[in-house]
Every structure is written in structure tokens, then in C-alpha cells.
Image (cartoon, rainbow, N blue to C red; front, side):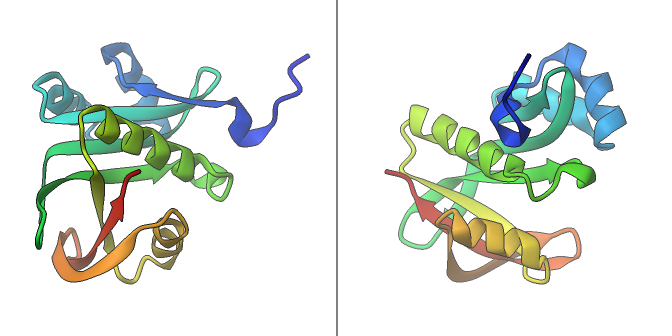
Length: 152
């Protein structure tokens, strides 16, 4: 019997073509486009899995975002967790996996853009060590806050 519970069972890995239909059912979105961008080397597309069930996704955009005094910084974005699984630490696990990918490519910082009115996401990123830069970047509903974290 498996005595692991919750987030301990969750594994994060790169999305593969066979994963797209499962992701579409769990988290509707344009996963085929994300995968195509990953295949072209522009992104890394990650999914969190609880067994055979997808429970979240995140993307690392390698083109990066300009951050004052740093130049382009890899951007972690498109973070999404199945609504019934939010609050379990899956988002934190996805961000940690994305940050590890940035480190593996020699990155020393990661950027995230978050809508200022998305309080839950703002709290998550702050708890993970992301700090506001004072800059804003475009998001779907207007301007988002640009957050950066130094990766050690």
C-alpha cells in the first residue's frame, strides 16, 4: 500500500506528445502549442502528475524578460493547477522544477509576471522568494507585476 499522500506523490516532468489529450481534459488550454514551442527549443513545458493524472502545468520561456540591470531573464509562466488540487503545494513543486531547469542552463535568476489582483498567486510567489521589481509587463487582462528571484 502506498502511504504517500498529497504532494509527495506528485512528480514533475517534461510534457510529451501523448500527454496532450490528458492535459486538455484536466486543464483546458493550448497545450499542443506549448509543446510545439518546447520542441522548437523556445520553452520547456512541464506537467505535474499524481500517478497517471495530470494536476498542473508550467512553462519556462527561454527568450526571457528584460529586467533592469540584468538583461533577459528566463520567465516561468503559464502556471496552472487543477482547481480541486490548489493549496496542496503542487504550484510550489512546479515552480521549483522550473527553477531547476533554469539553473541547469546556467541561469542565475528567474522572472514571473503575475496579475496584481491575483492575490493567491502573489502570496505563493512571495513565499517562494520572488520580489517585485517595480516594473510591469503585459498580461491577458492588462498589466502584471514583474517579479524576480535570484537562484542560488
